Amino acid sequence: MPNPTTPNFDSIAPIYDSLSRMVFGDALRRAQMEHLGAIPEQAHVLLIGGGSGWLLEQLLLQKPQVQVTYLESSTKMLELAQKRCKQLAIPTAAVSFRLGDENSLKPDEKFDVIITPFLLDLFPDDRLQHLMDRLFTALRPGGLWLFSDFWPVHEPTPFWQRLLLRSMYTFFGVVSGVNASQLPDFGLHFQRLRLQEQASTQFYGSLIQAKVYRKV
Ligand SMILES: C[S@@+](CC[C@H](N)C(=O)[O-])C[C@H]1O[C@@H](n2cnc3c(N)ncnc32)[C@H](O)[C@@H]1O
Image (tube, rainbow, N blue to C red; front, side):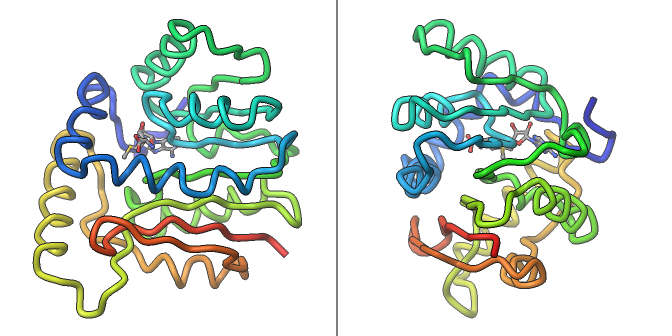
């Protein structure tokens, strides 16, 4: 089971996708799908914080031979993802749906690819460090980490981006118990783990970045 400091997206789950589309159009989706092509055909993939399952659907359409561990801390999001696959008759024999957070990973579990789609922005630095360390341990040497998240490219961050980020943190703080109040320094966290950046794309006026990192 997820620990109590993990945000709870149950109440927002039924409307999360519509809400994110209303604010960002298709930018969040494009960012998450940008680097799916880099995933090796028969990879064992950890998709953590995938939400309602639309990204899982896209992953399985593009890479039908992958094996997926779908790790979600929200019961409602996990149910939506399972329902979605059933309704669309997407074969899920190679998908393991798991309720929990990074602490639910088994000690010896290893993955060729880890996907963190708009997950890492939810945590203050100390918890983020724990989460990223745990994921790093679970990633095989040579494995890929597909990151997509809010990470403003321009310095100083434009006013409209700061305003939007502040509104989001306030909203998700109230609705989902998100403890963070600002974006972490993702660059420092990836540097600390010595992950090598392989590719990077910007979206939504450079507020969002999708990156591929490799574990050496
Ligand atoms: C901001 S939402 C993004 C959902 C999805 N990636 C999308 O963009 O449509 C974050 C998701 O991560 C899940 N989550 C939060 N912390 C988690 C954790 N530590 N382990 C697994 N899932 C987590 C939440 O339940 C939620 O579904």
